[in-house]
Length: 121
Length: 108
Image (cartoon, chains in turn brown, blue):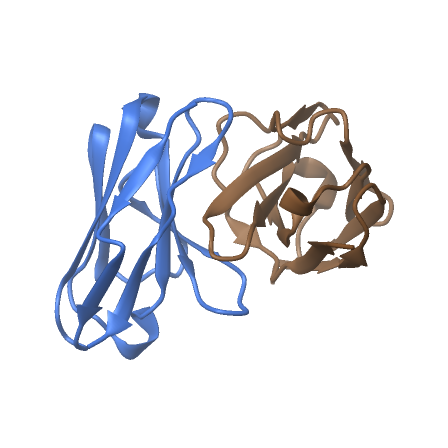
């Protein structure tokens, strides 16, 4: 059974940094692209970043230069390093698995339950 | 960026009734790269449909997706109690990948 479990969310002041993790199990992690999607309170889902199986990364314009996605295939873990956080980054952050390796033109076949990030002073 | 507009915002129906959800794109979604997800409070989103019309693993045949170009539809032919949720569409044809704001299917 595929399981994705996010952790690392919390309350952080504007300008601060936070590191989110997503522990994956139930599939061969290194064979699939992985993605972070977020959902601000009362809003729709928003794509944040994708990393392919080959570690090619892409980012939404809203986080480019501030967030870094990475993966540790030895630990089956997806990571999102978030720097220079802003109030508008407040959201539940979901990790999601893609059905393929490349990370292009992917839907997301499995999702975690999310971790809440609140950016506020 | 492709903007997805979902309608209606809320659909109030009774178990056993038919639900029809719309997702309209601001420009054509190539190759029908359109997915639908089901989301319940506090739970992980669940893939329902991909490729506009292909049911995901474990999704009952009461769910069907259709459409092409800019207009897509999700139909739940007979609502079960567990189907009441928020449904979001997602285009993965053109980066940045975008989502609609969702349609809430609530019990009338």
